[in-house]
Structure formats: C-alpha cells, structure tokens
Length: 110
Ligand SMILES: [Zn+2]
Image (tube, rainbow, N blue to C red):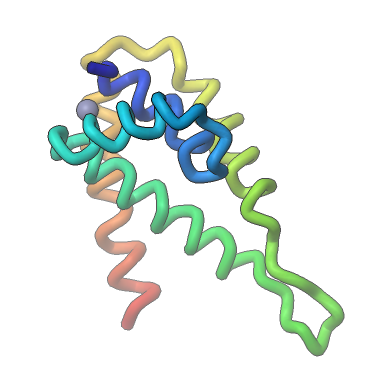
C-alpha cells in the first residue's frame, strides 16, 4: 500500500495520466481507503479548476484556456517545495488546504 506522502506526490501524474497502470490502481485503492488523501485530492482538483477559471482569457480577446499541463506544472513546483515536510507537516498541509478551499469554493459558487 502506498503511503499518504507517495499518493499526494503522485497526484499531478495521476491527473495528467503519466503513471503506469499499476501505480494508478495503487493510488486509486489508497484514495478510496484514506479520507485525508481523498479530501486533499478534491481540493487539488478544485484548485486546478479555479486556477483555470482565474486565468481564462475570453475567446473574443484571442485567448484560450490555460493548458492543464501548465497548471499541473505550477502545482508540481509548489508540491516540490513541500516535499521535505514531515508526516506531521503533511497533516498540517491537508488541514490548511481544506480550510482554505471551503471559503474559496463558497466565494466562487455564490
Ligand atoms: Zn492517505
């Protein structure tokens, strides 16, 4: 079974379908059994969606949606800075992400 840290570290690859099938299945098994990682993944997806919406350029201005690969790259760079966190630090990141995502979603969905 993958650790929480391994699953979180692989979320960008999972989202961009860059993981081998065996790791995809292992990640999905972990996510279905671990409420903390499942919550983190939901906030991760919400962050990607919100970033895409925030940086969307209207089509009549000649723009296009920010490519998911770019969003995932930005999030991966951020994640890399967190890669030295202790397990206790990861729990804090999960907690803070959940706290931050709630009001952000409420604001965006009003
Ligand atoms: Zn987990």
